[in-house]
Image (cartoon, rainbow, N blue to C red; front, side, top):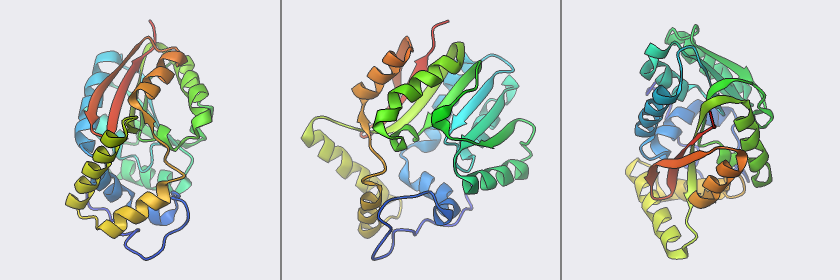
Length: 245
């Protein structure tokens, strides 16, 4: 899963006005993910440990905004003893095409399936778990509360939602410093200052992060009773939210 083409999309003088998940992005998405998300594999491992705790054998787990299926392939390996069924949902047919090919390549068709769907209309009752990694930030802010409430409604009692997000700090200085540290991380992963600046420009009106407190407040309002962070790295955070039993 590490032989994908390298992400050089923003190594140019001009880019489209807004970031879109088009064919060019799909082609380099796995490399983009690996080089842009701090501690991505560690977050997946920690997430799998939580799923192992809260899920029952035979549960169904949904990955909303599953992209090329990389996370689900990792989860299926880490949780192979649970006899879980994983379903990836995405509204990009190009992403799903690549995800299905990868699942077939790794012989996971029996445990992983994919479907084209607008995730904001999520309607799959009795889900054991829902994964929402680095996806909520792309959903319009005014839709987020209702979307999270819909997820909570569809989880079975005791079901779990895992969310990872880019976050902001309401302290201006800390926010600037966190962003600067993140840019140093991206430079250490091989991105140039031009690429970093151009991607930031393309994402400005598309990726809208909330603070940790704002995300946790939304989850509580959505009906989850146990809400905590389980990972934090400067301007990135992961949350676990458990539906009452």
